[in-house]
Length: 130
Image (cartoon, rainbow, N blue to C red):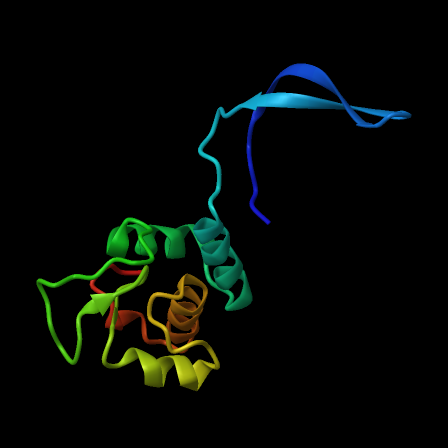
């Protein structure tokens, strides 16, 4: 589920069944709407006892929240890849260690592996600091 922050603008009536009417509101965003990736980051931070805002800032610094990002300008046993920019050659073993998918572009796994590693004292693995 995504979390949304919005301002109620004007109610509308919608007929659900012939005998039932539901009032809903149209919305106009006043704050950025949280995306699924943002929710993944905050949930992972919570799961591993980390500060969600710091983990979010780190993800933004690493990939601007792009779960398909690849940094072809750096190579060490693979390119930094995915939302948290894991070196693709090291990622499968890291993911298996923590019980997550070995697909470096799976945002849920990529973020949770990062959070687990930071909780284990390995924050120094990233260019963008936690």
